[in-house]
View 1 (spheres, rainbow, N blue to C red):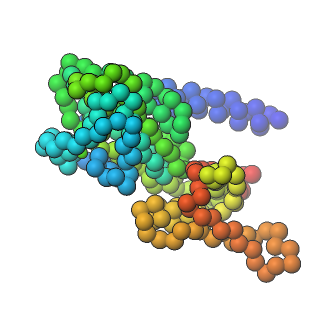
View 2: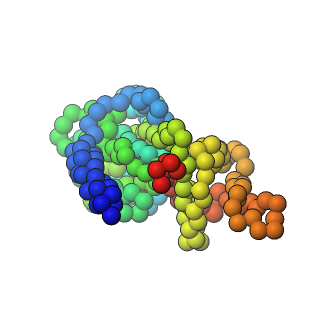
Length: 251
Ligand SMILES: [Ca+2]
């Protein structure tokens, strides 16, 4: 009982420590002309990564943007989203006199914040406008929606997005893989580190159009009369998943 209380107090304390800097750092502000080590950059014209919808989107070419490109829309309710597997992302563009004053940011279907990027400041290209650094490792969907009125001086613009997709390193632990399927069914698998890594690699390979459409989990428990039992995880049926690592020694 004492241990539980200590864990809870510690978790609350940890949350306070984590949340305050995250909120303060959410505005970003750094200029990143290249992704940091361990991060991957996706350019705005990567249609396998970005989903542009609910508005008229235009492509512009201009050297100061990453790769010399941006995608922009002045339509009210213009929406762009992307889904990734990892722990962190950064959205790059700049604040300026022709940017939207109401960009609604949602993470995994939850509205987080609305940004005003309509400023009189001189444009600093490839600035981090939104940054999340400490998400639980898994699949996440980020959505930006332009709420203000249609206009050519109120644009929602994507230059590029950086993703950190390296799973947290644990030396000896196991992990619970929690999968939510499109059907709403949730399943949990107790896997080794190697199995988790294999699953993530297979998932990412499938996401870019290579690799198998499924992943097979060997069940080492409740075999009953069978020599082996297998679970078949079909990637296209997955809505989202989370990996929660633990150390079996301390459980
Ligand atoms: Ca670009």
